Each structure stands twice: as C-alpha cells, then as structure tokens.
Image (cartoon, rainbow, N blue to C red):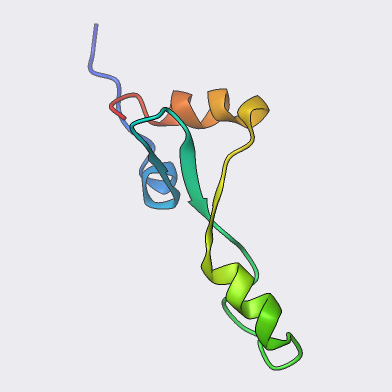
Length: 65
C-alpha cells in the first residue's frame, strides 16, 4: 500500500488544532478593500473554524494532521 499524500492546497489553507477543530482564515480580505468599512476588515483578520459537517472533507485531505 503506498503512502497517503497530503493535498498541499488544503495544507496551506487549514490547520488542525489539538482539540480536533480545524482552523481556517476568512475570505474577502485580498482586494477591493476601499468599500469595506474598518470594523468589517478587522473582523476578517480573525481566524474562523471549519463547520463540523465539512470537517470530514478537510480531514480526508490532511491524512498526516
């Protein structure tokens, strides 16, 4: 049986915490920032978590954690 490879695109976007939750970054922070107000941009700085219903898909892409 060959080794299971990590999907590198998923490894760059997600990280698994010790509690088992999956951390992700928020979207809409790259460009067209002039029309977004300061409070919205500050909220986008914070990290989010993957919803439990989607966590299985992400874990399948990250076999080595």
